[in-house]
Length: 346
Image 1 (cartoon, rainbow, N blue to C red):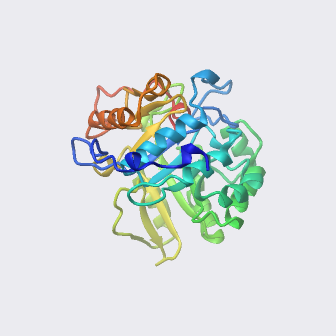
Image 2 (cartoon, rainbow, N blue to C red):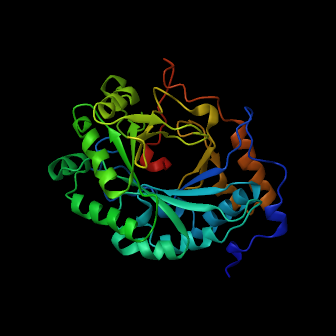
Image 3 (tube, rainbow, N blue to C red):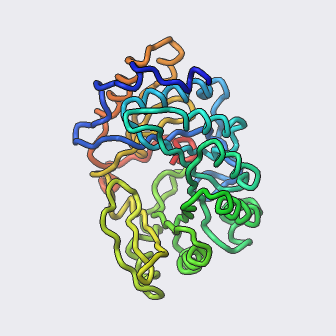
């Protein structure tokens, strides 16, 4: 077994510092961006020519990201979500999942999940499942080929659908489908996307568009709100809100009594910051306590300067102590983060 997989007693018993911020939120969910690169060019994420990629020597090595994860799991992290850019573009993604799935903390092994555009899942779904990947979230904003091309600037709808099917066959369930609802772009497909998921046994999740685009062109007036999404759905189905949301970003409704369901992530109009349990590690080793944070904690320098695990744990805890009570998107003084979503990791 690789040493990076093998937790030592001193690493899994880090009672102090811990993962609690100033407002009593305990952070059990670590999002790790494996790369800032992506195989699509979604209009709400980046310009057609893309954005400047991170230099390879600035990105965390696999040993480095696994070490940060090992310390975080020892502190109490229970779920690791791998993100990008597009995480399946990382050449050693199967090895990364394998090594992360062997970590162990106070609550046992962390659950490993992944957010993807699904283009590489036909080849990777089964290998990832075999080394411990539990489930996937897949981005799909439209079921129409021409619209998919317009939105992503790539003619890959057929490949995306094949990847979704491969995830289902591999048992990476529940397969969750994420769509960003956009006014005048795909808001006429809210029912169609949901019906697609109902028919195939997937879980549909709609996301309010957030100010995280590379061009900083986000306009709240153009955003389809969670209420509008629910109105469109309620015209076709009876929706029953589920209780017990906890720290989940999506509020879930049963469709016609279940078992099918649909979720809405209304980060802008119905923020859930008060129960947020997520912390994010960028591909270049910066820790972010909030998706909208404008400050980051540099773990890469600590790693490369020879910091021990206690120092890393202290840096993680210090980052969380700086976390604000909310994202303040409605504040007139709100400033969009310098990094776009593709460089932060969702």
